[in-house]
Length: 141
Image (cartoon, rainbow, N blue to C red; front, side, top):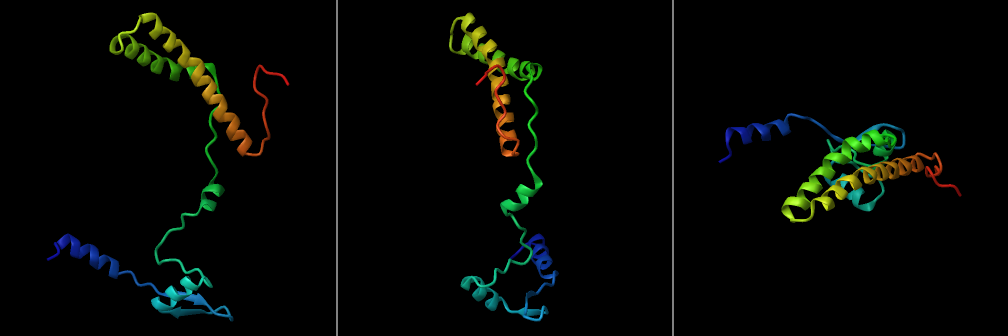
């Protein structure tokens, strides 16, 4: 036997009254049965959405747009790269029993790595937005 909570949830689904409708040639809405809707959906003549289903098409995501990644800066790279670099240094030195100098080299390499990653992400975002290709800083063609 279902619990009181399960019965309440099931009763809630029956409280919402809805009908499956299609537009006829004159523009009037005509109510159809579920079997007719399934038959039309299988034929491919009229796409009939499920009642209460939300649209998850990629078109809605494209119209919303993507969030712009921040422009790369050395200050931001220091804030993000140093903690990861220090963590790598600790792991190399204490867990892998490597020389402390190697851990320091790893820590220092994380800062330019995060700057390079940020610049790559920002350039890719600009290309997707239709801004064309942006030249890399420090390189000439």
